[in-house]
Length: 374
Image 1 (cartoon, rainbow, N blue to C red):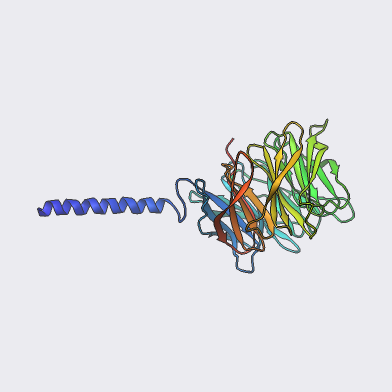
Image 2 (cartoon, helix red, strand yellow):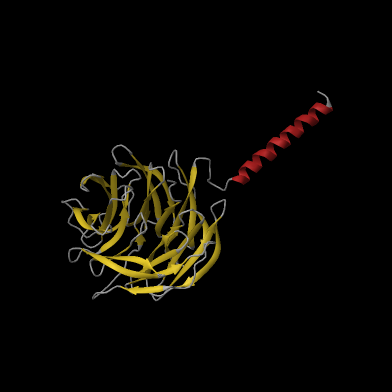
């Protein structure tokens, strides 16, 4: 073989190696063509340092090792903008809180934009109330909700308005818009009500309320993909309540209620999170104590639920969970288990099958994928 042939082969190998390395650089660790980013909010101080990012392979359900996306104290709840360009986080503290804004770069790392101090203690929920216009936060300890303007670059403006929930012991636990964004809803665990607002002239204007049975402890809300139904998980009574729209076009009419726990269970348990499946045929809610995800089939015509069963494998205080945009996987944040576990979801039956996939992370309490494209 001539020296020219050897030289040509060497050049080809170098070219191939360079191309291969460029391909590796184009993907961060754990990322593949079939993977999507998952952001994890945590309680810090016992191993965690802030918000983490990992990748879920939407073919086999594998999770990559978590990487620190940004350092932040107690980012207990996250919200991703409707266009998937920005992420906002609430830093939960006992006397105040901090709202932080980040842009999401092309490798799904977070680049800081700005932050705003908040009013209220133990703030535990935020959401984009109107796309790149208004951000809402709920403060459990102070029993109030707050409204902040959003700018087109994702930055958070100064506090616009505060609404203190009325009642003896208010504990606001969430704030979020319904699908048409005409109304805003805030579940309050302390006064057994869902308070309804509209945004008028830059303020949260009270519109109405939904009363729940005494001692229910309403916590988290989700909306059916059809826009016809609201589902509520009540923490203290461990119930799911389905609510229809009333004559005002706001959700206000209780249609159905179901127990979240098996009849045979006699221990102490508290409801936490709740989500419809992407196709709206199933509803899931988490139990802390029983340590499970309850699975229901949902009737879109009547708003009724039928209990299918409970998933329990590897679950330990499931404060939060999410369903990936494809609808094939359900991921659970185990606050006390210090990990995130993955279940494969049967899209026909709604049942959950545990996978061996999980990632170790200290006190995970919020899981967020990019918003589904409609």
